Length: 230
Image (cartoon, rainbow, N blue to C red; front, top):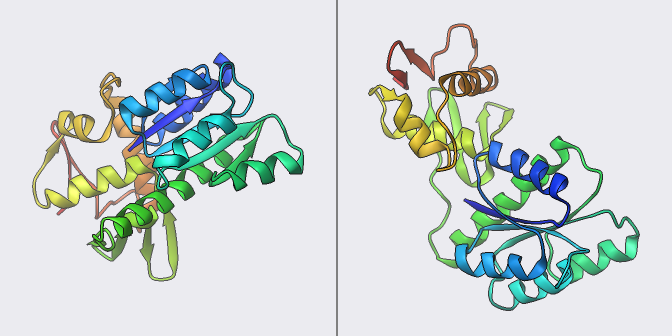
């Protein structure tokens, strides 16, 4: 999935790009409203993060333009303006949520995941495709539409990249999936492959989905190659 980040402050823009790309999204960035609209028309992102006070066009103006023809796109306003009236105005224009600067990493991730769930559900409904199919990995039920997995009454929150990894391993059940394939399918084209990064991500994912992450039953290591789901 694609996310457009429109923010005129370079440090905030870079910070958001790092947080969101780490979640597994393809990111595009703009420093003003005009560029944001041009990039939106070029890449058709699924989610847009809009700063309110930007050169050329405000976030409100960009939101209005996007909403004219793209009602299913997820929109998050990100601004230092914390007055209630700004929040209400942003939501009335069609935004899905509103984050006030300064923000925490967990707050951004939670809101991006929530908007992603709505976008997936809305697009599936709009295209009359029904729910994206759930699948099982052992006793773990993975629900792509919710970015979640379930084991009994326990809920595991998943990032988009977690879901991409699990979906790939599930689709290749019984086969060893090499590292290059994992990077190609689950990381964006700007990422420089790094085995340590992959291993760290798998390690963290195991801690959340395995009954015993030290003796994994879902994601098994295939030494010298990559990983496999039996």
